[in-house]
Length: 438
Image (tube, rainbow, N blue to C red; front, side):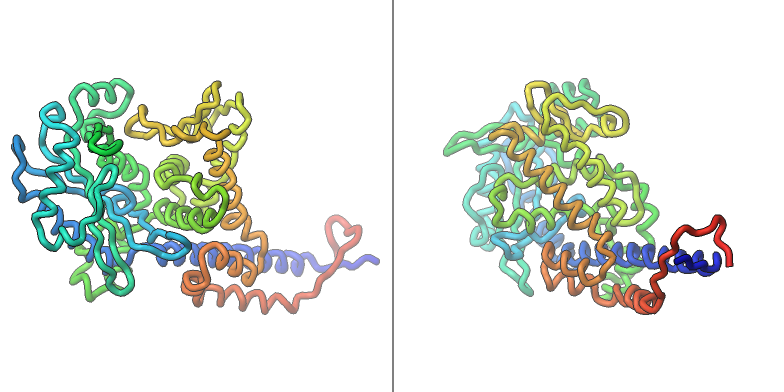
């Protein structure tokens, strides 16, 4: 049987179907944005965190330290500095926020020892009666203050003692191609190997933050005015004017993508046999930033990151080499001997994947398994074309409560279009004439 349909009717129907697809993607992107916002620290809690680490920093800076000439530098590092902070999950439940603080003392590395530096900062913290009660046991690299919960949310403040890096090491970094202004921000941090045994480790949190900032800046400049206006309008109890809204509260798709990826990782690996081998946040952040192509929406950002990283799964087979765009991005490399390399962008000598070769590349396998999960759960999910199924999948990966907030009111227009199209009859056209005719 042959059914002839007017061309304009067919084209109109196809156009309506395309609108549904576009509408679904737009709404899904909005859900992802809402999801990331729910994972993020709120403006009020951000301000509270700033007040707390500023007070601690001032207390430490006002102390007296042998041989110190000049001012101490106290600054944040890690996810709080980069704007990718997510409330961590521990044993399946949301835990306290971790805030990393660097205490850089103006001392020559050769004039002190990591043991004495670590001890001097610890003693200064204990001189404050309130901080002494909050102080945790000495950790490998830092001192930790545990703040009690308020409104169900607490903070762990990690204080990392450090001194400026040696001139020789900075010169070596410059020789390896690191820009001088970034290399000069390098520091030496204390590293407690075992009881009463300390060593120096090189780090560059300020340089890394500058590298990350350079990548996100073009999109940040396009978004900051609108976002600051929105934040101000919804937080007038905190800010008196728009100019008071800090840049750190403006989030680009890159930062939002990293937040979602980190929470997805935590949930997916919870209770899994590879939980101890799940990707570290520094790897997720670095690879996402390298893969980012300045996409302006969150879904496209995640899709781009996942597609680039999934291609590299072939590296699990030794001897594979890549060329072209993937090679230029310097995402993940593997030597002939099977050694994995994900270089720190501000210190090539530091390899974030230095343990990926252990246990038959177990951590590498866990990473690429996770990338497959991300692709299934966050990218290919749109192929379901069903709001209910999409929501159900997100609930499994992020939790009912947070997804309920993220989807509230977003699916409405999609549901209306779906209902309108439900009355369109299904028509099979066999052997249509070319062109179709009445």
